[in-house]
Amino acid sequence: MQKYVLYLLIFMLSFSFASAQQVLDRIIAIVDKDVILESEVVQFAYLEALNRQIDPAKDPAAFQKLKSESLENLINKKVLLIQAEKDTIEADKRMVDFQLEQQMQNILQQIGGEEKVEEYFGMSITKVRKNYREQIEEEMRIRAVRSSKISDVNITRREIKEFYTSYKDSLPSMKETVEIGHILVTPEPGEVAMSTAREQIEQVQEKINAGEVFEELAKTYSEDPGSASRGGDLGFMARGGFVREFEEVAFSLEPGQVSDIVKTQFGFHIIKLVDRRGEKIHCKHILISPEPSREDEVAAAEKIKQIHKELINGAPFEEMVVKYSQDDVSREEDGFLGRFEMDQLRETAKEFVYALNGVAPGEYSDPVRTQYGFHVLKLLKRDEPRALDLEKDWQRISTVAREQKMQKEFETWLSEIKEKVFIEIKHDINES
Image (cartoon, rainbow, N blue to C red; front, side, top):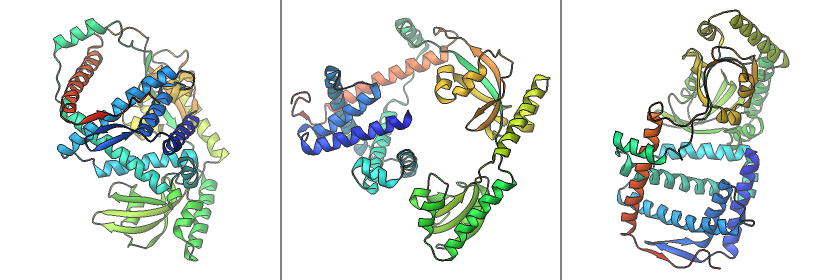
């Protein structure tokens, strides 16, 4: 479903881009020294229609409203960017790079490589990255401007009570929630799997030693989905950005030098150092990850069954967590995994929903398999759905009340600064 939505989104982008070139090229509005084209507004509206599940062909009136809203949003965006310029607010380049890489990795993985991305967007991968970078920088600057104006907004107890009295019938109810702990056992690659992976990385090493291009080998053989399509490129990273075994070798290399085989928790690597800037390095790698065999899966399944049996027979949960769980984060919290709405679990971990069916607080689920491994869940607490209560849910209500107050103050401030910016609507967006 997620992949389908992404394809549909890209189709809409491509469609609106093509339409913009052919027909929708009028200047709809002028904001200071910048212009807003009809193509921009329509593209924005199509994306919002997708988010709201509105079919423009079946509900043209709703789509016309979306176009009007989109024009107003684009005007606001340009006004806020002008304010960011006045306030000399810039985006954090490191965060821009980080978010850009995340977005590009997601797109490349879901669409299937650079060539397909270029085909869908109708432009080079370099142009796609440039467009995304500009969008990310703009959004960061806008959020920073907004934050600078409303971050110090406070709300009194009286205002919270008045808000609750006015809106209690329309406030969202508390959904069914659960607090759960777990013990996780992940299938570990055995000797056969490790030996197979080692042989594969050695074959790649032989190709490197024979003079084949490192980057091309990374694209062909590396099993790191985030970097393989970029020739294994990991970009610039500071100390602490890699696991210890990888980092020790990477920082010992000279620019252009290729390492011997390095073993980490992720598998076997070959590292190439590209550049060094102080305590930051730019490197590339090829990764071969050992895959657990069927026998390894069976061994993990048998282990979780034994853990479950011991828990049912009275073994202390916290002690079993420390002894067996392979979830490093929750193990430090006595196995506590978190508090979740059941609707959230249905979307992200439906296996947990089935496993918890009929389980009472304090009891354990049967062993359950997910993409992460084998779990035994302990239901710590279950809250049934109910309406928000001022005393019980004071913190949540105060948060919603403060957010509403911040939004109102932001809208008032935005209206004030818009009066100081030249804005001209050249055409009605809904007139052909």
